[in-house]
Every structure is written in structure tokens, then in C-alpha cells.
Amino acid sequence: MSEAVSRLEVRHVSRSFEGRRVVNDVSLSVAAGEVTCLLGPSGCGKSTTLRMIAGVETCDSGEILVDGQCFAGQSKFVPPEERGIGLMFQDFALFPHMSVIDNVAYGVSGPKPARQARAAEMLARVRMDAFAQMFPHQLSGGEQQRVALARALAPRPKIMLMDEPFSGLDKRLRDGIRDETLALLKEEDTAVLLVTHEPEEAMRMGDTIALMREGRIVQRGSPHEIYAQASDLEAVSFFSDINALKGVVQEGEAQTPLGAFAANGVADGTPVDIVFRPQHVRIDFDRAGFAPPASATEGVAARAITQRARFLGRDSLVEFELDDGETQITAVVPNVFLPQAGTVMWVRVPRARCFVFASQG
Image (cartoon, rainbow, N blue to C red; front, top):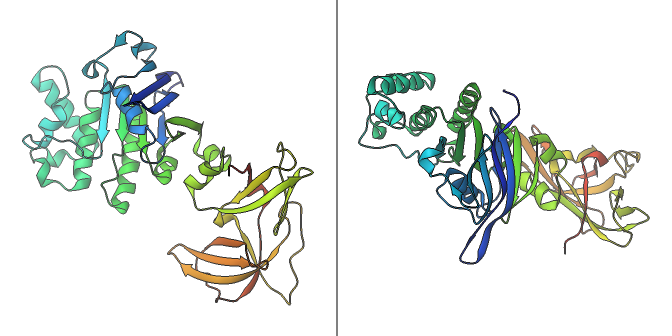
């Protein structure tokens, strides 16, 4: 990867439609050779942000810069065709009346022999050179995806914008195509902004993830930072299923059936949500009614009655009800683990895997 100088910079960009603020004060930057994933639920403003960067939409306020040059902002607007930005979308948008090689050569400037040579080079790099004279309708979805990538990269764009480009492919094919695409983009030293609503895709592809919600970027960081240091309950739950316990802070701690949880920085008397993921629940068999010893790192073990267990392929999902008759806990266990309903066990949670947030209501 080249030196991390911002190739794309978005500064305080906003956009409204019919009085509704769709993108609200968004700022982000992407360096050459870096992949940033703009992640969030449908309707949060991801695609609108992408379209403003491409120049297909105008921004109401803010600036968009490429290599320090302003392309949009104040009285400045560079049209899409002059921005040198590559685009990839879900529908591939290949021209049906053109051969594969002509599709790839379409956006390349210069004399025809040079354009054809560049198209042939890119087709070879995506392993589609044998299909050069075929037409899009003769290709599978994965093959069309490779051609779309070759076409997008053929003009040597400094920036690649990708809007859910893999969502039309089946999962097994999608994983392979994503990895191939990522490798090629890295080779080209392209700055990439990928829009997706799938956390797994963002974690797999992104050097950086910008988590977006209701028009705003609510958190930005590496995949590990976003996952392990989530900013709020919604951020935790966006990446996986969660367990949530209720508590009230007293003397810096919230008491629960799983023991006390530290609530640093939260005022006494504040209701809180204690959140942890199912894969972080620790399970022990009941041995003659004796609970595992309590510890500072894992708290108190709570007696739990198995309600249901299901095998999901790689993992098993086990649902428990605690002895209080109210608290439900879900655990994910690697491999096959299918205790019968009614089986008594003990559950506990490593404190390092927990989040404590002030309740929002």
C-alpha cells in the first residue's frame, strides 16, 4: 500500500430531498490503496453519499476533494465524466450489444489499438480473456462481475466507488469474487469506497469501516475497532445477535444475575444495558449443584435451564432461561453441542467481552 495520503476527502457533506435530510454532515477520507467500507442499513444515506462523490448528485453543503483538488463545493462542480472515478454497481451495467472486449475498452481514451490492448490486458488479469468476443448475455453472473471490474479499472481511475456490487451473486461465488476483486484493486493502488449493508462483507474487505446511521457516520475505525469497541448498543447489534441485561448503576456498578458489571463514567442511578454477544457466553455443566467459582474477569456464574438447542452447520445455538424465570440468554458454541431441553447448566460472561451503555429508553 502506498503512503497514506488522502486521495479522496469528503468534508461535512449534506444532502436533503423534499425537506428530509438524507446525508447529514458526513466526513471521510480514503488513501490510495485503501479500502473504506461505508456500512449501514438500507436508507441510511450510503448510496446518496456515493452518488455525490461520483457527481451524479449535487451536495447541498460541504466539499469533495480528489488529491487535494475540489471537485464539488461552494460554487465548484466538476462533472462526472471529468472526475476520473470508476463505478461498479449491483447490476453490472454492461452494454448488451457490445462484445466483452468492447465493453471493457469503452471508457478507455486514445486510439483504438491502444484501447483494445488495455482491454485485453485487463481481461487477462480477471481471467476473462478467453471470453473477449462473447456478449454479456452469454456469461454467468460471476463472469459478468469480472468483466464489470475489468471495465471499471481499464481507464486507470484513481478512485473506485462500489455500490453493493456483489449482492447479486450466490454466497459461495461471492466470497471468491470479492477476494479476487480486492487483490486486483490493491495491485492497482486504487482508493476504494465500498457501500454495503452486510457487516461480514465490510469486515472481509475493508481496511477501514465507516458505520452510517440516519444520514450520519456514527463510528469509524478498523474492522476490529468497530467490532470490539462499538460506540453504542445499535452498533454492537448491527454486527451480530446480542444478549442484553438491564441494570441500574450503584456505586459505579450494575448488579445482574451474572454478577456486577463496572459502569465506568456512568452516574449512579442511571439505567444501563449490559450487552454481550452469544459467542462470548461461557458454559459449564452442573456438577451436583455447585457453581463454578466467581472471578473478577468472568463474574458470577448463573444457573441456567436449557430451553432449546439447534445445530447451524458450523456452530450450535443454545437458548437458556436463568433461575430468576425472566432472563433469557443465547449462546453460540462451536461444533455440535445439543443439550436436551431442561438440562441445567451454568453460564457466565468474560467482562472484557461486555459493553455497558446508558439505556436510551
